[in-house]
Amino acid sequence: MRALELTLDQVWYVNKAYWRNPARAFFTFAFPLMFLIIFTSLLGTGTVHIGSIAVKQSTYYVAAMASFGVITACFNNIALAMTYGRDSGLLKRLDGTPLPSVSFIVSRVVHALLIAVLLVTLTAAFGHVAYGSSIPHGAMLLRFLVMLVVGASAFCSLGLAITAVIPNADAAAPIVNFAIMPVLFLSGIFVAFGNSTPAWVLWVARIFPVRHFALGMQAGLVGTPFHWTDVAVVAVWGIAGLLLATRFFSWEPRR
Amino acid sequence: MVATVGPEIAAVETQAGQAISVRGLRKAYGAVEAVRGVDFDIATGEVLALLGPNGAGKTTTVEILEGYRPRDGGEVRVLGCDPGSERARLKPRLGIVLQSTGVEPYLTVAETLRMYASFYPRPRSVDEVVELVGLPRKRDERVVRLSGGQQRRLELAIALVGDPDLLFLDEPTTGFDPSARRETWEAIKNLASLGKTIVLTTHFMDEAQYLADRVIVIAAGLVLAEGAPSTLAFRDRARARIRYRLTDGMPPAHLPFSAPDAAGFVEASVDDPVVVLNELTGWALDRHVALEGLEVARPSLEDVYLALIDGADAGSDGA
Image (tube, rainbow over all chains, first blue to last red; front, side):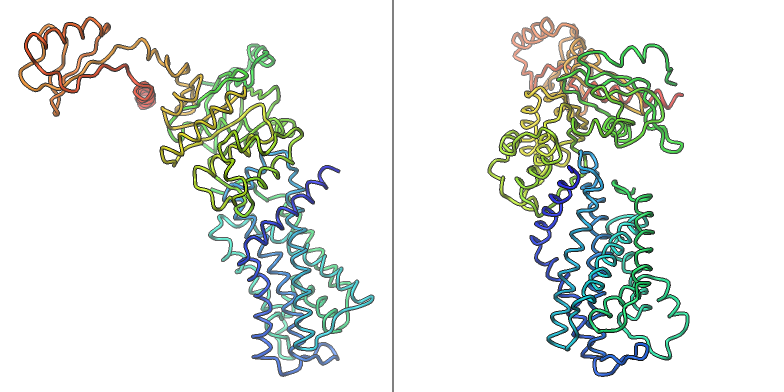
């Protein structure tokens, strides 16, 4: 299992390099926590109705910001890191070595996944202490972890796929934000849905994976019902992303 | 210049001692023909420089040999493999230094080399490699803190750590200050002394002259000339040029000197500089004439190169 060994090696190197840029690491973790504090301060006093269950606004945001953190750590970071690596010639150099491309890609995804798990743990712990959100346990913990791993992988593969339409590293951040920000808003991440939410918004939320992923996170952290259909929708998006990435991913700068 | 696929192609495929053999190589990007039928061979252990202006087809040729790019036509063997269809077999035996410089900035020199070494079946030791490229004191420095020249030498070290049989260096010193160039040249000389076959592309004639056993000049997708740097295009047999600056009077009438140029220099192009110089200096001593800035020169590699490229331009304009 040479490829497996190389993949684990790569995870170790990626992780080493990751923590040697403390600014990048710090802000990846601080960003969702900062948003959590801001949103709960602004809007955290009311209640949100999810089906027949009433949830405190503040705990709602714990789950929403945990989802947001995972999406940033996976979709955004993978897309930006890959575009940078592609433009700087790092990917081309690696493509000229015997390192299997699967080892390269999988190691980056696994590392993003580890960061996502750490991020969710931190957000959940902070939310529990500051806002009294729940910590999943027992069977719910397992379901929660399945959603987390499926979701993080799916957002990584979508991050790989979107590099196909990013012409250069300078354009990466605007394009990634253009793709993800509207979906985040239309999926109730920043502003919870209510009775007056227009039908078309609900449809957008139903189609894209963000809302389904956030519902899974919510089930674990807030105690709302868990639906395997949410996991399925996110997984389908992940597989679609993987197929697109396999077909269109480029190891060389686009000029 | 259409490549003819004939029996001579099959014949060159398996010649012993040949690291690379290229016959009738062609590659077009859309309507632009970047390489239009190139033939050459590179012997095992040879250091070969590919010279040519920007857009001549050098990088395209090299990237086809490296396996990065498919070819449209012709035959290519690299270490006995077809880089188009047998890339995976070839990869462990190649070391590649690209023009762009992408290395993970937050790992140290030693970590980076250890990581690349782990990809190869029989890597060299990290200590040996940092020594070869002259970076032993930067072993534990992070890549982000290296100077441009040091980073380029790290890239050489990366290309070398898998102990390749064949090294490709694409413009290894472009953008360097003179001392960084010198250091990188020494590192490349060290590699050559290990018996590696090296294919170098460069814009710098002094680089080719210093490093290469043989030079191939490519322009507009074709091979214009090839030979040792000292004999390229009969440089060694070209006429010598004698020149000095007139301070007063005229040059000796019996010697073939030109009329003075704007700065007052006169020049003569001669077959035997020894005889002409003897006459010139005798004449000057007799008359107490100073021969200011006297020099005797053969055409440099650069002169020969520029003449070749100019000739190719004139040819393609006329066509």
